[in-house]
Amino acid sequence: MARSVSVQAKAGYTIAAWVIALVLFSPILWVLLTAFKTEAEAIASRPTFLPETFTLENFAAVQERSDYFKHAINSIVVSVGSTLLGLVLGIPAAWAMAFAPTKRTKDVLMWMLSTKMMPAVGVLIPIYLIFRDLRLLDTVHGLTIIMTLINLPIIIWMLYTYFKEIPVDILEAARMDGAELWNEIVHVLVPMAVPGIASTLLLNVILAWNEAFWTITLTSGRAGTLTAFISSFSSPQGLFLAKLSAASLLAIAPILLLGWFSQKQLVRGLTFGAVK
Amino acid sequence: MGSISLQHVKKSFGEVQIIPDISLDIKDGEFVVFVGPSGCGKSTLLRLIAGLEDTTGGTILLDGEDMTKAPPARRGLAMVFQSYALYPHMTVRDNIAFPLKMAKMSKEEIDRKVEYAARTLNLTSYLDRRPRALSGGQRQRVAIGRAIVREPKAFLFDEPLSNLDAALRVNMRLEITELHQQLKTTMIYVTHDQVEAMTMADRIVVLNAGNVEQFGSPLDLYKKPANRFVAGFIGSPKMNFVDGPEASKHNAHSIGVRPEHFVLSRDPAAGSWKGKVAVAEQLGSDTFLHVNVDGLGLMTVRTDGERTFNHGDDVYLTPDQSRIYRFDAAGLSL
Ligand SMILES: Nc1ncnc2c1ncn2[C@@H]1O[C@H](COP(=O)(O)OP(=O)(O)OP(=O)(O)O)[C@@H](O)[C@H]1O
Ligand SMILES: [Mg+2]
Image (cartoon, rainbow over all chains, first blue to last red; front, top):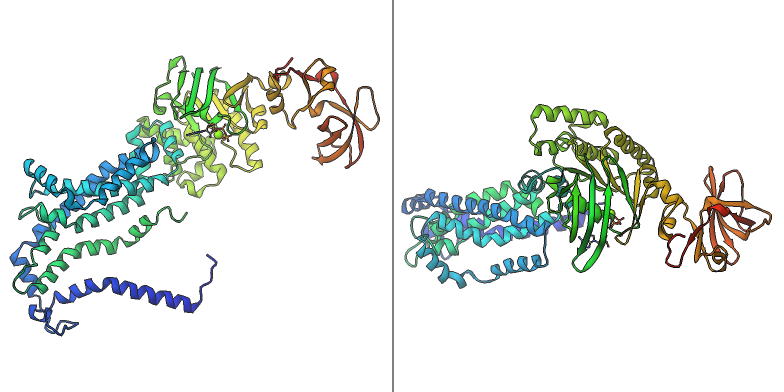
């Protein structure tokens, strides 16, 4: 990298990056500030930036009306559970497609991805009926299964692209060294693909955490996740904006922190293979 | 024990036939080298033996046992790859120990064997390093160490030295030969460097377009090549070929003379070919002359390093009549 960048250009890039980051962050910032305002102030015709009267009553109201921790635990179980299940299914699948491809591997990959191109509502009725008949409605394990299924194509695709970067020689060496398939995957492939697997895991936890369509339509009280929790605060009557903000803040805080602390890993994983 | 027998082995990739039909018998303890031009199927044949590719037809016997369908892990063979293929996330110690762990050996036995292999290969002070922190030659040694610890029936090498520089290559060549003398285990070694082939092999398999052109000892191939392809492939610099009337004098479709089988002089002699020196390559020990012979084309001649020739010198080449190779129209030796 012997390219010299002038000071002006550097300053320009820095300012541009900050402006873009602030624009992207502004909704979250607004939610953050609104959560500490009173309901009246939240909808005031002349909006205030900082809360005039700093209050925690929204949080108290939210916790009182519906149990935050129950929803949070459901969210954790569904997002982590579905991601782990997805990895258990996805790693062998991606192994097969990356290292033992057939003529149709590309088509299978494309077909899997195409399932993500259909709006979820298109399969709402069949899925709902299946869930009803299997008694999976409003259950955490039912939600985990559907979340695994909808994210599996992404998990397999991500793992497939990471695995493609691994020289097949090394896996062949493991086979020559007496490793059966299981040992080849556990002792050689997975440790070498740790960065890729970690970012797949993180991204899918985030996707599953934020998924709202299925969590709202397939649950009512018991298995609701934090997305269902948020939506229960938007009501057609009464003042709800500040409480909704408080609920949203509570719902996104854990995943925001996860993203913050795993930033490095995420970026490294998402650019894996791009720079050699 | 490690005899390897291929019976009518065939291999195609889709529609493309790479190995039409090969039968070979490799004896226990033999050092066999596969040579041939690039793309002739050497690696493919080795990978078929290893079990890394499935055969399209035929049978592979290891120690008389049919292993055609067995996965690589069950064949009891060890392989050293051109790229070394070390496990980057493991230390040198764990790399060498990996096959022993897969064989479920006890911790003490693994430690003992790893220490022994490391001492044999001068790797003791690198045992806790990762492969990334090793030089090419050291990595190659680790790859060999990983292969020897498990005491395989046979070793398979696919151009293991081609990523090393010339001096190191000579060293490693000697080390592998010594290893073979010490272990007396069957080794199959793929290379397209014919010096490696000649110096290391008990027997050489010359491959061309997926066919075995000849299977024999290095000197057999040098002295009695089965055909024109082998004659041209074995020996450095390459044999000179002449066809037309000069070949007819010897009742052949074409004849071949090795560069070292000419007598060179500045004066005409009986049966000599007249030519002009195009290029003189002085190696010190030898001089290779590329001579434009009237009516016959460019010939390579080997002469001792003491004599000096220059571009444009007139010279006379006299082929040693007892060492002229004769070939028929199909290229087979007569
Ligand atoms: N997986 C594969 N699919 C299709 N064709 C292949 C495959 N592997 C090898 N081939 C083809 O088979 C032929 C023989 O390849 P192979 O690697 O055995 O050659 P080689 O003798 O080892 O050559 P080199 O000296 O360059 O290593 C080549 O034409 C190659 O393109
Ligand atoms: Mg090869």
